Image (cartoon, rainbow, N blue to C red; front, side):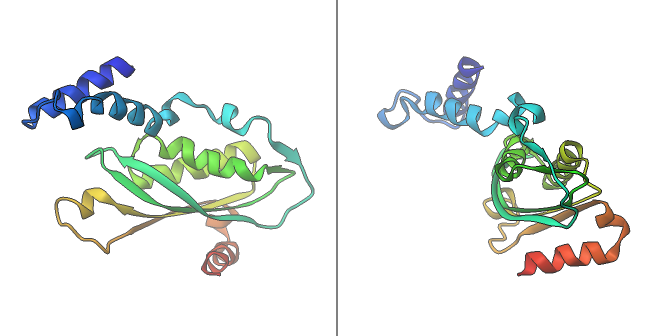
Length: 184
């Protein structure tokens, strides 16, 4: 994959009218290919691999919230970055997930070409699948370079998406508790 990406970046540099042999661009295709491999590593990861058996038996049955997990992703429409943060809450049902695994789940799905709506849904379904939770709530807030650097060029715009599963969807009190907790 690396050589294909490197060649692709060389082609882009040439197509925009630059000289790929210019000193400042000489190693750019190699560096850009390496960066793209990193930014898309989520395609080469599995949920089982990243959670690494860090699911533990627990009597906890109250809401667990992990908030302000930063994320960096690439818009699938323009291949431009979007950055933001993710808030995840769940109601355990006999199992809890190791804390760092929430960030790993976010990263696995964010490090793919994405739309924010899909990213939010994938995170929620993954937490539900791994924990067997009775409810999961996920909110993602992000700023999209495809809207800031090009097109309408709106610098202060942001997008907020949410997915509520199980108790978070069915019970307004649970959903409201989640929303109040992330407000601080």
